[in-house]
Amino acid sequence: MKIKSYDELQDWAFTWPPTGDGPWRLDGEGIDKALGNNRKARGVYWIGYSPCGNHASFQPKYCGKAVKQSLYARLNQHVRSSSNQKIREHLAARNAGMPTLWFRFVELPTLQLAELLEGLEIAAFKEEYWNCRNEWVQHWAMEEDYPHR
Image 1 (cartoon, one colour):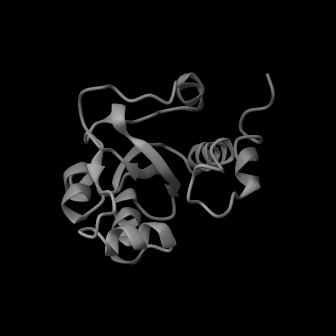
Image 2 (cartoon, one colour):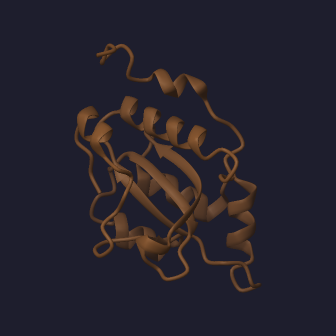
């Protein structure tokens, strides 16, 4: 999914179409399938469970942004050696009864939009997410560009 502006982000209902692309398994093959033709895309991603392999059953557990590097590179970092302990544990124990991890993402055109979306998402779901910190400056990422209306 691609969001092209601040107004589109404000209007987004945080829903994905029930059919169509994604979510994808969090592994090299899934990342290639999702982003292989768009390796420079930047944005926000969610990692979680999807018991039925579709958006309707997706249960986000981690939210991150890829702005200093591409989504393709950032997600591959998680697969190789995630900095998040829960993700590392899941990927190390794939066949030991732990659920498969999946991901989905939103492509965003600017660093500020990605900062804002990730910050709001983590704040809203702090108790349910595996993220261990919220960078509060993210909530003000758009302040210079979009004054209060």
